[in-house]
Each structure stands twice: as structure tokens, then as C-alpha cells.
Image (cartoon, rainbow, N blue to C red; front, side, top):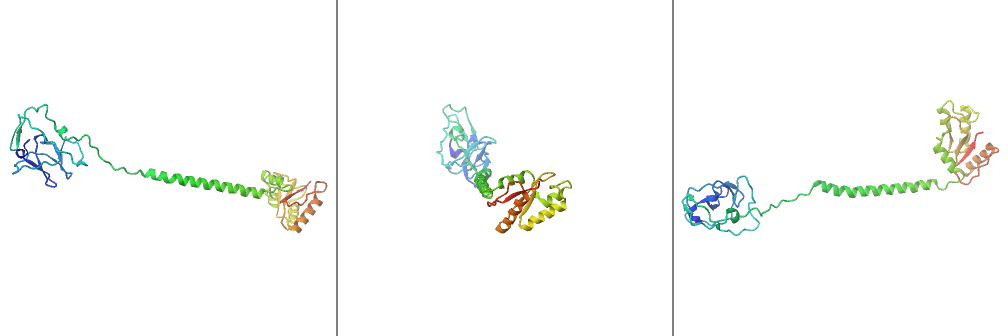
Length: 264
């Protein structure tokens, strides 16, 4: 194609000029500045031939990349002997089989758009949650182990009848004796009235008992006495236990926390 005979078209955005080709008539083209516009036949001829820059013809409503990463080599289309051009118009005969079409001269299908990949916010949150969950789990395990060790220290050693009495308090609803006798009108300890039970409990408290427990739903056959740390008070309470228990086996002070007073 003779570039000087076909006229030029100009980009309405930046003013860049391009040689008009009959194949572009009525189609959308993209300027190297990125502006797309319709290629209309020019009304005036250029005074001198214009160097042909990069431009790509587009099908209607189709899209191609504006500027390739590397400037492609411009391939000029050979004009068959049956093509004649005049100012602003062109008459074409059937193209020669050897003449490449426009798509072959300006390939576009091989180009790919480079799309910036944005990191998914959800991935960042998940990356943060996992180590936090592991840390919380480790802390929980550490607390559980420490509590277990602390509980073992509290229960060890179990001297005298401490194991038996602790089990009775846990399993039989061991309650402070005064609270227990007042909580139900049918609660009984041996043949004592409620006031006698409270007086008996006060006697033990005056000797130094830390707490006195009663058991059972109706009748408490024994009382558990929590012992103080003071040696003199412990001695007085053990002497009382030996006198009160009568024929039953006597408790010996081996450093235990409780002893039982049998009420029958």
C-alpha cells in the first residue's frame, strides 16, 4: 500500500497520525497512547509520507492490549496488482492467496494481559489465626498440668483417715453441722435436739476445731472434725475423741487433717 496515497487518520486524544488503510474503515483502533477511536476515511492527503507507527485493528466490541512489552517489527502488506488507490477511496480486487491478511500482519491472539494478583485478605487472617490458636492451646495445656500438680500437692500425703473422710464429704454432701441441722426439720444426730447439736458443735469449736461436718440426708451417724495446726488444740481434740468414741478404735495424731467422731 502506498502510504502517501491513502491519507492519514489522527488520534483525537494525543494527535498522533497514522496511515489510513482501507481494511481499517469503520473499525475501532487503539492509539499507542491508549485511546480507542473509529478509523474513518481521511478527507485530506498528507504532504509527505508518514512513518507508520504501531497500531492494531480491532473487531467491533473486541479488545486487545494497547502497547506490547516489546515493540514488534512492522510488516508491510504487499499490494496486489489489481489494487488501485486514489485520494480518500480505494477499489480492491480479490486478494492474492499469497497476500497475508491483517490478523497475520498484526497478530493479537498471542498476547496476554498481565493481571496484578492481589493477596486474599482471608489468607492473611488464616495465617494469623493458626499460630494464635496453637499458642492458646499450649497455654491451656500448661494451666491444666499446673492445676493437676497443684491438686496432687494438696491431697498428698493422705494421712490417718483423711482419704476416707474426704470421700465422705464429697460423696455424702458433707455440710457444716449447724447449717446441716437447721436445713431440715427431720435432720437428726443420735438422740440430740437441734439446740443440743449446736451446743456440741460449739464445744468442739472452743477446743480449736476448724470446721465440723455432718453427712447424710436425714441422720448423721458421725461427725468429721477438721483439725487445727496448733499442737495444744490438736491434743485436746484427740483426747476428746478418745473419750467420746468409747469402745470404737481411737484416732492417733499422725499429722492428718480430719478425724471422725462416731455419734452412736
